[in-house]
Every structure is written in structure tokens, then in C-alpha cells.
Image 1 (cartoon, helix red, strand yellow):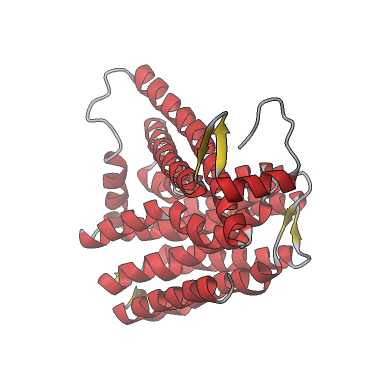
Image 2 (cartoon, one colour):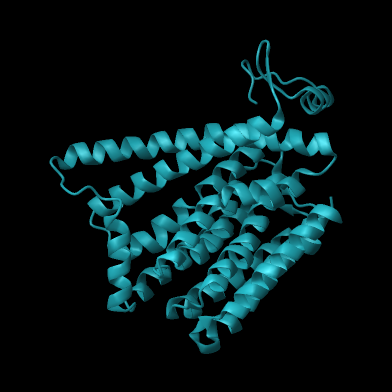
Length: 356
């Protein structure tokens, strides 16, 4: 937790106190790190939902086409928890947690969430995903490995990722015009769900949703502060690294909205938008979320050897595998979905029982 005045006690004292007795929030009030983590996660997810709703409504009011809102604003909005965690982790000198969270989230998004959707019902793939999204996801994952090869990610590399995000978004805008009429209508329905039935006052509407956006950002950062401190205390209590916590409970927790949205969309057989956002979110996680996190880290972000040798290459391999899978018969079969889910469960088991 941040303390008044800016002075921080020696790290050894804080570590032993936090791990052994929980986190001291105020004088006389100490909570177990697990409770702090859960409280932080709930606040982060609530704040992220406010950011997503506020940003989508403001963009719609500004007459941004629904398909662009779905492909950009919503994709970035679902990554707000990862951004808040990354910024807070860097501020608290826990950079490995931020990198582990991005790697773990991207692996979870594709192997488990997308795989679970295909396992429940075979998943048709959009042409835009095959032509643009998957190749960019592969390029971003490989670029991240190259940047992290020296064991550190620095500001200049973060700027390169942000430039890549701009180029990807421009290409996305151009190619989105070629989407089918049915896909355009589905995006329109998704945006309509967050718009009010009537707009009595345009100024009031913009003011309210702008305030919702700003409040959501503040709430997300506050929750991320709790989440990162709780997660790090759990890591110290169990003798594991911050990166390990980022790969597991933080990644799973911050991906909860994507999991819920995708499962519900699958049950309704209306999931083209959800799956497109899932892939877009995995791309923006690297290009925007990690890129921004790297640019604000004054001394760069350390990348642990295990993350560099295992998790980042695995995230790239998962992206590469998507290309032939998406191209084959233009759908992800239930068998392929089952293999994806099984692969994630094996990976998670190895994390918990071998690498801990």
C-alpha cells in the first residue's frame, strides 16, 4: 500500500510483516493478504466495467461506427484491469508481476477461454481474424520475446509497441469496412446494449458518461493497488515469485470478464463479437497495456528467466498455432477446443506443482 508522506520502511521489514501478519491498512487494522487481493480484484473489475461502459457510450455519441467501437474501444476496455495492475506493479517496484500477468492472460484467453467456447460449440472464425488479427498477435508475441531477450524491457521498446498499436488500429479500421452486413449488425446490437433508449440531453449524457469513465479509471487504479499488494504478500507468504502470481491468480482474476462474456455468448450462439474482442484484447495487452507500462517504468522492467524461457515462448506458440487452426475449414472444431483447454490445464498444473 502507498503510505502518507512518501517514506517507505525497509523492504525486509515490510516483506516479513506483510507475509507473516497480513497487510496493515490503517493503525490497528490488519487484513489477510487473500482478503486484500479479492477486494482489490472486485474493485478493479467494477472499475473496468465503468470504464468500458463510459468509453463505449461516449464513442457512440460521437458517432463512431459500432464495429469500430467493438473492435477497438471494447477490446482495449476489457484490458483495463491488466493496465491498472501493470501501472501499479511498476510503481511498487514489482515489474515481473506485470509481465507475468500479460503472458498468463494471453495464454488463458486463447487456450482456455477460446478453447472452452469451441468445446461447447464449434466456433466459426472471422476472415478479419485470419487476415489481420492472428498475424499481428504472432508478430507482437515474437517481438516481445526479442525485446525481453536481455532480461529487461525498457522505455524505448515500449514506444515501439505503442507505435505498433497505432498501425494495427489503422489497419483494423480500414479492413473492418469489409466485414459482412450480418457482422455489422451484430456489432450494432452490442453497442445498442450500452446506449440508453432515449437521449433527453446530449450534454447531460456526455457529462454523465465522461464522469463514469473518469470514476472508473480512479476506482480501477485504487483496486489495482490493493490487488498488487495482496498478490505480492501471498507470493512472499508461500515463497513464490511475483511473476508466478502474475501468471496464475492475477491472470485468472483479471480475465474473469472475458470468460463470463464468452461463455454467455456461446450459450446464446451469438459470440462472433466476443471472440473477436478476445483476440483483439490479446493483441492490445502486448502493444498497448505492456507498452504503456514499459514507458512509465523509469528503470525498465525486469523479466524473469522462467518467464523468458517458458511463458513468453508459449504465448507466441499459442498464437502461431491459431493460424492453421483458424484457417482450417474457417472454424475451430470442438476437438480443437478440447485440445486447447487440455493444454491450458496441463500448463497450469505444471505451474502449480512443478515450477512453484
